[in-house]
Image (cartoon, rainbow, N blue to C red; front, side):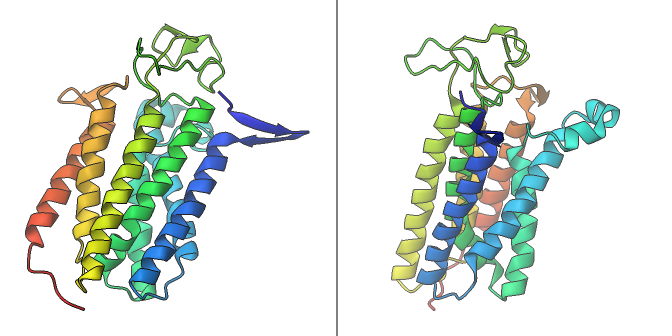
Amino acid sequence: MIPFLHFGPLSIPTFGLMVATGLFVAAYVLQADFTRRNSKADAFLIIGIAGLAGIVGARLYHVLESPQEFFAHPWPMIFSRYGFAWFGGLIGGFIALILMARQEKIPMLEFLDACAPAACVGYAIGRIGCLLSGDGDYGRATSLPWGMSFPNGVESTTGKCLEWGLPADCKVHPTPIYEFLIWLLIGLILWKLGSGAIQKGEKTGGRIFFCYLILTGVARFLVELIRINPRSFFGMSNAQTASVASLILGLALLWSFRRPPQKD
C-alpha cells in the first residue's frame, strides 16, 4: 500500500489526500443538485464546512470508542492522523448541514435531499484513502482471488495485520473497495430518485435523505459482518449498532413523512 506520497522532503498522507479529493468531488455533485433545484446556494462553502465538521466528529467518535485509552493519552489520540469513525462523521456533518441550511434559508428536508448523493460520493472516495494507507479498515482473512495484503499499511509496523495476530502479508477482504462500489451505487440510486421527482415537478420532501439513512445503514451493517471489530451491543460492533439506528431512523422518518408529493 501507499500510506504516503514523498516529494523530496515533503510527505503527503494518501488518506488526507483522498479525503480532500472526496470533498472536492462531493461539492461538484452538490452544486449540480442545487442547479437542477434552481438553488443559488454555494455548494463548495457548504461542503467545506460540513467536511471539516465531519472529520472532527469522526475523530472524536473514534477516540471515545476507547475511553480508557483516550483518558490515559488524550492529546496523542486526538491529534493522531489515524482512526476515524463513519458514524461520528455523519453526526458532525449533519449538524453542520442543519446550520448551513438555516444560513442559506433553504427548506431543511429539501436541503438534506440535495446533500445525500454528494455525501455518498465523498464517502466512497474517502474510503480509497483507507485502502491506500492500509489503516486497518480491511476485513477478515480470505482466500478469494481479489483478497489483498497490506504489509506496508500504517497499522503494520509490528509485522501484524492490526492486532488480530495475522501475518502482515495475509490476504484479507478489501472492504474499502466494497464500500467504494456500494456507496457509489447508493449515490446513483439517490440521484435517480431525485431526478424522477424533479422531472415531475415534485418536491422530494426528505425522501431522498431518508433513503440515504436506510441504504447506507444496511450497507455498513453488512460490510461489518466481514470486518474484525470489537463487539459490544448484542454481539454487534459499534458501527453495526449505529447502522441499525440509522436504518430504524430512516424507516421511521419515511413512514412519518409519507404523503402525496407536492408540486412546485
